[in-house]
Length: 156
Image (cartoon, helix red, strand yellow):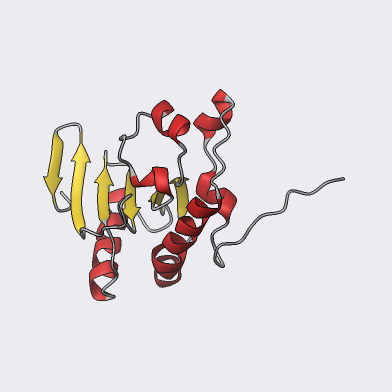
């Protein structure tokens, strides 16, 4: 019997959890990151996701982490998405509360801990997008809400 070996990036996050995609599986797309993208996923986990997970004390679920170009296109992602580089993840924490409550917690945690980041987005009342960097490595510290009515500054 062969076992699938999981690659730990941090205590609570594996490489596999950071690139798993039901859409890629459905379409037969290989969504596995290369070594450079894996290093960026590790940075995201070490600098943001793991410390956030420890702070909140509850499991954080990664709905979407790394997305290769074919996967990103299949899910309708932005052509400049930080997900393409391994710099972003869409996350939820159901045991903490709804996505808005969780996003407000993340916003306060980032500020209180002076954590460098690119984007915190409360998306479609359903999940939180957190990016450690843009594709070019820049960090904007942008906090926005995106929903069916448009894009807004802050968590609304």
